[in-house]
Image 1 (cartoon, helix red, strand yellow):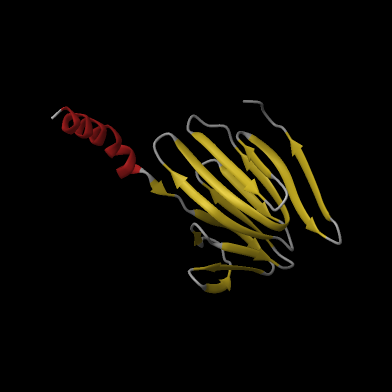
Image 2 (tube, rainbow, N blue to C red; image 1 turned 135 degrees about the horizontal axis):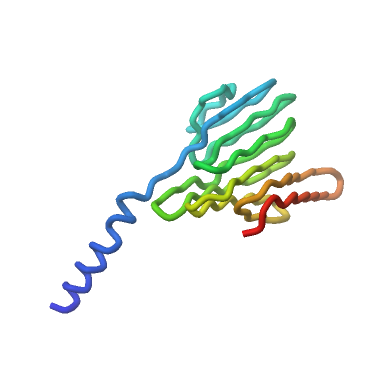
Length: 157
């Protein structure tokens, strides 16, 4: 009997988080030049206002693109860059975006907000997690793997 009561209490406590947890989307704000994306097995030219979801891949040629991730994060994908959206998630307490930088360069701007914004960018050689800052991150593949990270802190948490 007590197990049933505990189960019901736990169920009703966590039900709102389960019901209101939602997969976020990324919205394309700006595109110039040659940029392609793949989503659900299709490869297409990236255009303004396209909606990207988890597992989408974006590859720039001689172009660049800006993506809005959640309410307070914008990334600029530089020319000759490949990324994958590993996770986009939102609930009442936070927005989470996880990207994989395969190669190239990203310019990132994450605004501070009341809601917890988590942006994580991973590559083969590192992971960077940020909140409330601007930074540039790059992954270059040559004969030797060369990594450069430049962080321009706008604000400290």
